[in-house]
Amino acid sequence: MGKGTHGSAHGDRQGDTQGSTQAGHSRRTFLAGTAGAVGAGTVGAVALAPPAARAAAPGRRVAVLGGGVSGLSAAHELAERGYAVTVYEYYDVLGGKARSMDVPGTGTGGRRPLPGEHGFRFFPGFYRNLPDTMRRIPFPGNPGGVRGNLRNATEELFAREAGRPDLHFPLRRATTPPRLGDLTPTWIRDEVTAALDTATKLPAHEIAYFANRLLVHLTSCDARRESEWEATPWWDFIRAGDFSEEYRILLGIGQTRNLVATRAQEASTRTVGRVIVEALILWGLLGRGLDGPDADIDRVLNAPTSEAWIDPWREHLASLGVEFVHSSEVREVLYADGRVTGVRITDPGGADSRTVTADHYVQAMPVEHARRTWGPALRAADPQLARCDKLRTDWMTGIMFYTRRKVPLVHGHVNCLDSPWAVTAIGQAQFWDGRDFAADYGDGGVLDCVSAIVSEWDRPGILYGKPARACTREEIVEECWAQLKDGVNDAGRTLIEDADRVAWFMDPAVSGLGGPDPQNREPLFIHPTGTWHLRPTARTAVPNFFLAGDYVRTDVDLATMEGANESARRAVNALLDQDGSDARRCTVWELYRPPELEPLKRVDEARFRLGLSNTFDLG
Image (cartoon, rainbow, N blue to C red; front, side):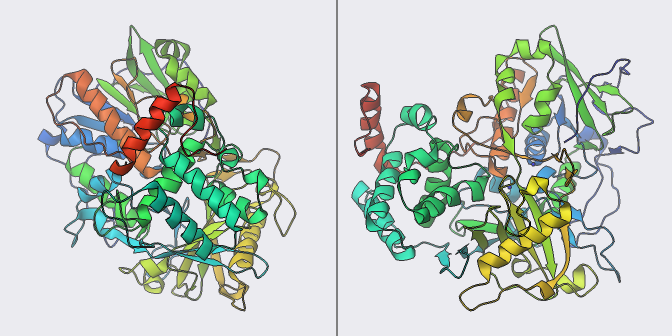
């Protein structure tokens, strides 16, 4: 928690009716048996899947455009149901923003290069669709598959600057949860008030007001959420502008910009309230709606993402007959006579144009790339595609700092609340119980990796007085490190020092830094007010064309790996319906809804229809 331009050209080479490239493109094609790193992260021998696994029955060939989480999730579900799937991916590796990347030139003595990523991964306990997929990806020694590589983080550090007291927030149940049926508005208000009073120095009247606002959202009906609260910025909903700076930082900015790269002044109250405050924090602390009894609020992987998850996934999909065609940039989704007739693909540089065909197409690309491939005829066939032009993205990019000693930050994530660049971070090696960092990576002298993320690119920093977009790559690294130190080194403690740093890595998707036109090929889809009504559904008006990705309308309603996975399940179900398949439909888990609050939501629905405010809404 993630791009070149797409033009048009003529003279496409037709053919390739099996949904993959013709002979002569073998350097781009990794067939079904391409094996990846599993467990130890070494490349295995190529073993082609049995021909029967790749046999394409009439009408059952699917082209999946994009090899990120949504694309791999769709391929997984389709392959299990007997479809012949080819995945077309821009990069030479799979995983999209979730993939790991080697830091060039850093591995010596038989060790692997230092592991880099777009940004750290975390898997909140309310994720249920993605962990279900992870259970079905075999991993040596794990009865529960790749899901067994998840580890619970136990706390979060809300770090403050200038020696101000930090807030250590436990990520296990903060109180004895109420029994089913005992969750009442009074209980909720009292518990939230007590928790904030204990953990913060907010004035009592501000705590009481926020608790009341939370209660309003919890008891609001779906219609009010999708109408009134979707149109209301979180900043306005909690009246952040009327209260203290502490209130604004902790409950406004800290819940939006630092977590989902959306400004509180713009972020949809429906999204922030429902997903971050309710599902992630409140129900997570109460142990409700989680992915099993062993799941806590925050989970991370026990190794670099590709080693722990993506590479085993690739190998499993290959065993199911899925084919992968890398270095494939989708330029145009071709449309005629009411159907998608093919997809024009080139190398990332725009050369070697060809057209690939299939019976069905699942476009699983980020919105900023997908919408460039939709021509006028396709857009006219389904008006929801044109609405996607109004969807917005912003920058949220990671920087890895490699250190010569283990850095004792906290057993979980660090949220630097006062950081002008909204820096968050985590010390990773502490969770990698299956790895000896120094023995496995780098030159033997690196013991840890502090993975940080910059979410605010438009505010001046503390070192150079410039926003991140105006800085060079080196200036961004130094600025991020300074802001991280400013947050965690206080109260007489020095957790990280300049002498600790050995190397760093920043996602190469960000380019042109320090110049007049910096670019980011992997921005983050964000959720300003009104976004819900612009998001497309997985099913389109074109019978053989389906959408998957974190921008597609899902119940989780947030740019997450969970949303990407859920959208793929919805796309596959729509495809099965359209195909008249008798295959079992994908299970889709939705966010937890406390049964105790449903009667209050029904009351609110009646009030909403009458034009009245929520019962608990005091303004």
